[in-house]
Image 1 (tube, helix red, strand yellow):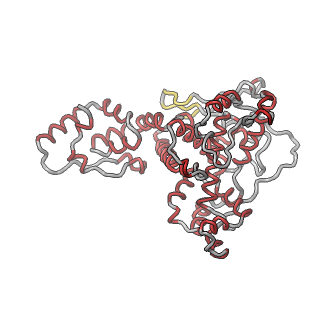
Image 2 (cartoon, helix red, strand yellow):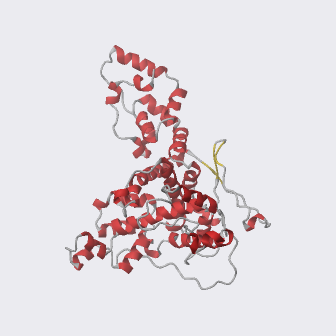
Image 3 (cartoon, rainbow, N blue to C red):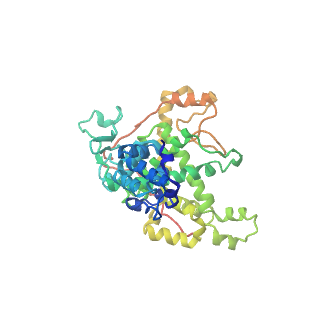
Length: 439
């Protein structure tokens, strides 16, 4: 008899309708009281079947559900609630491994800590992560051509353990990922609305991978932690090493996602005065549009670069609750959450540009024929989205020849990756511009 047949309608009627996946803080106490009415003979038989179902079988059932269904099943009755609470860590990890892959990248976000900034390779060399005696993530290794491979300095990845206290953070990240899977397509195709569609499973995998890379970068270099320095990323900067450790495909996915994030902020959250007037068919005066818009073009670019420092979960929250925030209230809320938010602007755009140019120069050496203007093909080693382009990056390529071309370019992982200290003398380096929220 299947589990669905064993479930009594009387039991289901007394269960909470809201999924506990939306409230991980109360997971340990989920459940509902059994009916107080005298059960019928059929109900007694159903209860007997459920009571005799082995715990191991129920745990296996939990692990084969999706995250929302698992929490809903746990809210069915007290026994299921207790079994889920007792095996919560193993159940959630098993589901996350299947539903929110790549699992290694997810765990690296969960175990990110401020102490990683104290180690030159702490932010980009993946940690070896365990749970009890099980290795969940093997950890990162250096590319063979890195300077440290032949030097006397030997480095190893850090060790970390997944504890029960990490599960709430993992669930929070999973909710953020699920939200971005929901809103990404409508903003990714904003330049070509007729091409809007849902993402395939392979495209969703790329989106999640790009989100995990963005989350790590935002945690280390866009949040409230101390910045490595006040300069624009260049040379052996730890922020560039964060991206040098990625493959060409991963860089292209991250660049595609980042371009979409900038579009969301520029067109939806913080439109310029000109965009506000265009959206209103020029029926608003300059003065009225200024109350809604976020400055003229130059000021608006600084505002967008400042707002881009918001973490993925914060940006998702403000987008889904945009009807609750006026312009002034949004500014006040961000300043209250991050008192030093306007100290600088985002640095991911410049870091991406540096790494892409490094790989372009490497490609000119390894594939000279493909870098000639007469070759008639895309010459960049990393995907660059053109206006209205609805393929590449996170999306699948429509042309199989382009897929083969991208595979031919090679991965180039770790190109110019170097964590040794900079030379004693510094060339002139510009500082990251000061941020701006209220133009």
